[in-house]
Image: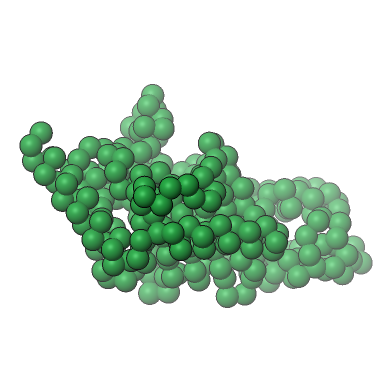
Length: 277
């Protein structure tokens, strides 16, 4: 579904939510209290500024007795076979974000992946899947990355653990091309990159990747990921704790200039390795 079409449906969602809420004689605050979000969030849903998660849409249906209409609309908008169920909503938020901050402890983040790298990572996670399935997942990942090519692209600041530079996904040639791509985007100021080196030792949030997203007209959101699961967090105290963990990681990382030099040298190491094999 094209982005413009998605936005139209989200606007319908908001308009219909307001109509059903008012018909039920509830204020935004009253409905928010019953579905465990703030009244301000209900207002943002109605204005199509923020998109509700599926469980919130289900609770709205229960409270307003709307026979599942909001759940069905929500599923229609986030149901994309290219993305895992727990990640589809994050894709929608990335398209709306004005700033994205990310920490990648092991792999290059999806927004920076080349096709060869994305293919190698997807195959490694789905070793028995047919090529058609792998291509579907890879195309979704590359489609996400198009937000960085837009004139209105978000500010994107990523901290890569040195693991992400060293793990040879797809082999030496693939890794050299991947690191060259990251270096080029950094030099073109599409993304600000730092590397957390092995020498930094232990670091916060060692359990998995984290992403923070900020918006013009909505509160910030955090996303953390584990094995085949993810958590989209919008409770302000929790988001603040994730931001604090990210800031500690960023403070322990190499400067952008030193990080770029390390990326370049690691890419050259992979190139030499590829030329001798």
